[in-house]
Image (cartoon, rainbow, N blue to C red; front, side):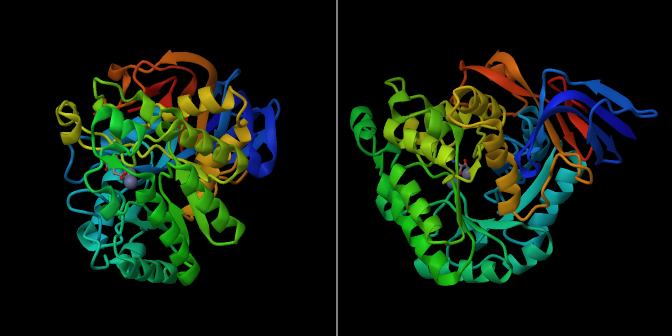
Length: 430
Ligand SMILES: NC(=O)N[C@@H](CC(=O)O)C(=O)O
Ligand SMILES: [Zn+2]
Ligand SMILES: [Zn+2]
């Protein structure tokens, strides 16, 4: 089947492309990019006024299946991903059971193949049951297609254990992705320690609880040579540690989330909004500004959502009892376009690097380029679409977004995975 996408502005820094042109796709592969292309027969779509980029990848997503399908499942989570403009996500292993063996990896792959609306890249756990003490079946999981290892949701407390995880992952040439949290410092911390914890009268989650593990894991990266990816960096000093590690030439990468860039601890008011309870917590305005600066200067490799869906009834509780996490798949691109691209903090090229190129590179996925021969995973963006984030407007099962009510400009309208539309004109293709 042939598909022609006509007249969009095509942007791909990997091939130095930024111009209005047509894309001809056949059998899921881009066969030609050029001007006034014609085809014998097939489907033609007029995309004038739109922007087309290599398909976006969110490398930090909780799809919750198996085990927590009341929050989300692979069908709803991948629909949310497509709706948000993503053609692939990396699924975190903190499900029930934990994805810590080959069977779990195969389960997620099989469900994604059966009901998924985007590609699902599987991350396996580092430790059995996320217990932090016994290695998971890392080699077996790699043999079955796991692309990274992480105990996301928890920090690995023991440095010797972390070293063994990295020694193993290094042998398999896969990255270890770390959720940096020192339990002794963080304990039952609810919000950023400092002004917020004092004002709200809640236990603090100190910046140092994150930074100490970032520093430790960078040291272990130096010791083992294993690729280290620091998940959801939230503090200025944490990002400085990554900056220094990169300057030293260590194989360290990192990610930030829209909520840690565009929300701060100041947003948590006396009504104790549980949607804003996230791990790590929302930090200070200075921290958020440092993350944005890191996005602009290249220190940050990837923007991810850490999409962490929960049910209404789980979140409609006292702040201390509500679970950590907010959704993100359906607001991420709009937030980045509104607050970073339109504001001139970054250009589209950098956005593509952060949301498509780097995530694939870190996970050793084949690059997707706007060039003949590349697989046709594409995201189509309407840069002028003005919209308001509404709780009822999500494909996700969950409503725990911290951005409900936000007025945004720009969103994805269409997504193609292997040349097939997964979303067209804003509606999921069933
Ligand atoms: N980020 C969160 O607040 N929650 C995540 C776990 C995690 O990413 O650490 C979850 O699984 O709910
Ligand atoms: Zn985490
Ligand atoms: Zn997470």
